[in-house]
Image (cartoon, rainbow, N blue to C red; front, side, top):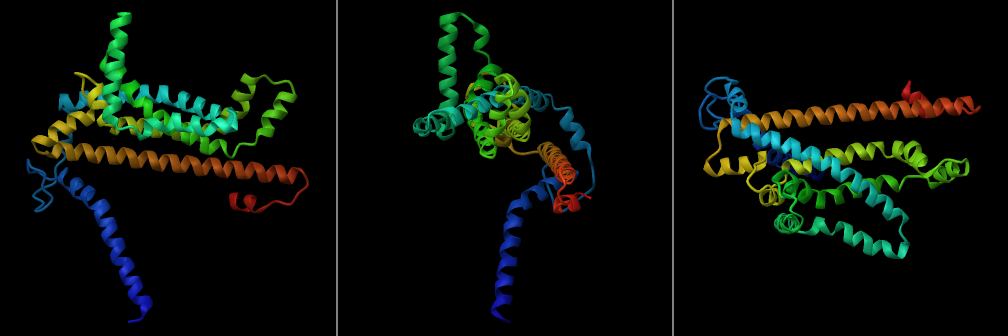
Length: 294
């Protein structure tokens, strides 16, 4: 055997171990969701069944936690996306010598442990409630949304910053020279350019909120999310219902990823076609983008 053959064999063995370690637990959990034993069992496979999915839908505690997670996730998206966008725009407008300090301040929540964020959120808003007598502020849902948003908004800001680095400021200047106002420039020029970043940051914010445990377990107070319910269940021993839930979450995630990729490719092809047509109308030769699009 040659050295090239040994290298390929070692690389193949490494890839097998890597993907086995990565997807092995998911495959085993997927098998246990369709096996009949009451305890998660992949082998021997006794009989195919889907009654664990019906039992999952009938589990009131898990369904309540899932509903709470969806509500909190929607609230986090509604709060973090505008805050992240504002933070990214300020980052591009602030004096360049102050950008390092500003960046350190707005990104610092990402480096703070979630336990500290959760406890500090509860203590702060408890004192605010005591002073203002606004008892609705000391609510598990509100505290969870605010506590998670303290660091998730920084993630969103980083997504917007990466997109803004490719933005040509000459477009804004040209629109202002033609008489457009700042709100019009933001609505008709900057926001359409940031549309992919808005979608990406919204998905990132929702997924980060949905799977968060450290901050949520302190900020949620007496309420429960899906993650906190699952943590309590796993301490007592896992069940096929949890495997069924994992299969549903994986299926929804894959469907969302496939839909996003399809829409992204369609949008890219549409933009390439429009650009190629514009070049042809200007008297230029159709470039490779037009050939690829057709």
